[in-house]
Length: 595
Image (tube, rainbow, N blue to C red; front, side):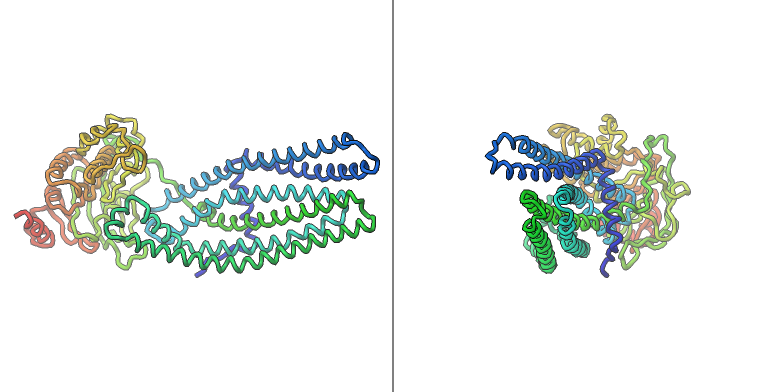
């Protein structure tokens, strides 16, 4: 289904909104630009009148054998006005650049405010990603709005000045030339709407093309692209998307070219008609020869400026259509999440996390990820989740952390739904943890960024996770930039990165801790040592542990076995082995490897 287009009355409103956005982003820059436009209008009028007086003086001085000195005042005045016009234009361009950056920053800030406030489930919806892409495309159009607005104002200043000067020479010529704006505006307006519709409809394909570009140009994908020889495969898919885009664009551009050429021809005919009228007035002696010469130059200038103004106005209306997407996205009702609690775990309440008959399905999924799941993690308990990949373990962990809202049932912390004020009460190590391109101390410290200056706490967390020795040995110790993205960055092994992620969770010092495959990259000895420390470090806290290694989960207080989104068994390790069910089967399969 094609997206609906704004009606004609909507475009002026969007233009007004665009101007308001620019004003809020940079009031001083906008004020200076408007002042320069007013000054330019006055200066153009002065230039036309001075030029008329100069030509009249020249025509009078030639038969009288006048001296050059008699014309110097008019020449100096015209030179001064021309210099002032150039200075006003330079000031305006200078402020325009700054204003464009301010608009870009403000637009990005508002988009990010929305993406920070929406539920995590929104990022599982392709339509949401299309909305984000369109809004960011609109943000990139905000500087274009500023440039088009600046160009429109400059053209209008020159056109108004020229029109006033032309009226001073002859009252009837200016209205005729003003008709030039009509065909140019209509063509530009049509062109803007068509290209906006084209860009909007191609958003999903453009996102796919950008994804393939990243796959072929980023470090994260580089090793697998080379290992599987995927460069040609991805490049061919990307080339197909480019071919389809360019073919559609060429077709649209060809059709719009005909309208543009027709508008130019009509505009040229109007200017030619005005010049013919001027010739007739000069031949009938209704206008002086000097006035006719200046009027001819002014008509050409006015026609050009009006055409530029109409084109800029059309470009501005096209950009305004993009701004509609931005305004709709940025205007979403939202409540920004409160800052996580900054108090330490000792001062926070212990957390009893509970899922009660929870069901959940991802956007677009055929089958639910969870079906009527119930469990509890009490303070001082280590509760383990086991099951095959895709059984719903990580999804359940995210619901217990309050990152997703259940489709049915409810999740509670201490009997109430997780609140923003309690967000600081849990720490999590995801199996797809982030490897931040930050110094090592900041990679750990972002676990609770309000405590970043606590260097001693960072070191304690690193020691607890077994990361201190390796981190201290880096070229600049804890100040070493991690990852190769920036100059001086040092990459770590997978196991070292995992210890940094664990240290980040320990530094958070939270009463509810979720560990999703926290030792997957560690060897057996390192895993055993770490779990001995974890049991001691997290004593008294609520701990949810997800692991495929039964050596890790067998000491848990309770173990839940998940299969296809449901809990099929629960109990201690010994109870489940004695039961001889799914857990016992999986345990025996794993244990057999070591016999």
